[in-house]
Length: 362
Ligand SMILES: Cc1ncc(COP(=O)(O)O)c(C=O)c1O
Image: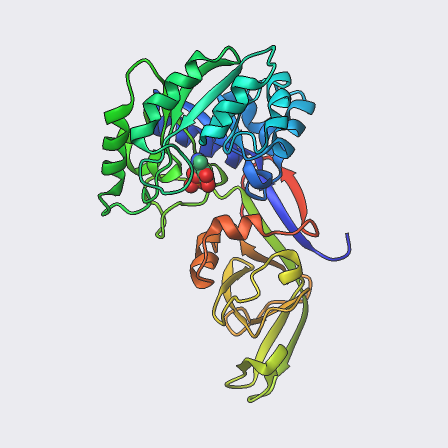
C-alpha cells in the first residue's frame, strides 16, 4: 500500500473489553451495540469476533441487520428504532429480528401485518431521555396491547439513560425509579449503556447494552480508572516529510500556526478526507516513536502537520499514531470538543481497516 492511513482493529482487545462487561455485570445478558459499522470498527469482523460470547447484537436498521444474517450470524439481533415503515415488518419476521416498539403506529402496523413467524419486541419507555419511547404513564397499556397480538412472540422492556456518564447527576436514579414504577417482574428489561454498565450497577438488570466500552473507549469525560479497557482501534499514518522551518514561517492553510523559532516540522499522511477532525486545534497530541508530538496548523484533506521539537530524531517513514493506546481517542475528542464515538464513526472508507490478534500500540 502506498499511502498509509490505517485503522488496525485489535480483535483480542474487543474480546477483552467484552470480558470487562461480563465481569462488571455478571448476571446480565449482554447485547453488544454494533450500529454505525460497529462504531467505525467494521460490522462483520467485529460481529464474528464477539458472536460466540454475546447474547444479542443491537443495530439501528435493516441495512445493518441483514448483512449479519447473510454472514450466517443466527443469534438475536435487536433493531433499536424498530421498523421505520410497516413494509419492513415481514422482513423482521422472515429474518427473526427483534423490533424496538416506541410509537403507537408500530403497534397498529403489527396488528395488521400477516405475520407467520411472530416477532420478539422490546417496548421502549422514555423515562427521561426525551428521545424515543412511550412515556411511563402510557407504557403499561402499550405493553398489554402488544402482548395481545398474534404477531408478537414476546415483550421485553427497554429504556435509555441520558446522564449515566455524570456520576453527580440524580437523573439515572430518577429514570430507574420511573421504570420500576411501571415495570412488573414478569418482563425482562434493558437499561444500561456503557456508562450505566460501568458506573450504575442498579441499571444492569436483565440485559446490558454496551457500545463504546467494547471498543475500548471510556464513556466518561475522564479515563475510567478501574475499567481496564483496551483501545480496539489504532489509527496510524506515516511521516512523509520532515524539514526545518524558520522562525516566523506559517504552517498549513491560512498560516494558523506561526513557528516561534526555527523548528522541525513533520507532515503526516492523514487528513480530514480520512475522517481526522478538521477542527483539531494546535496542540492536539499525536504519538511518534513512543513519544508525543503536537499537531500544528489547519488539518488538510490528506495531510496534517506536527511540531517535531519533542521528537527531533523523527524521520520520514516513521509511524504516527493518531489515536490508540497513547494518545487515546478520548484525548483527541477532548482536544476537538467532541466524543470518541464521533471520531470513530467519521472515519472514511479511505482508511484501510486491518484486523489483528495480539494487542500492541504499534
Ligand atoms: C439505545 C442505545 N442503547 C445503547 C447504546 C450504547 O451506548 P454506549 O456506546 O454509550 O455504550 C446506544 C448508543 O448510542 C443507544 O442509542
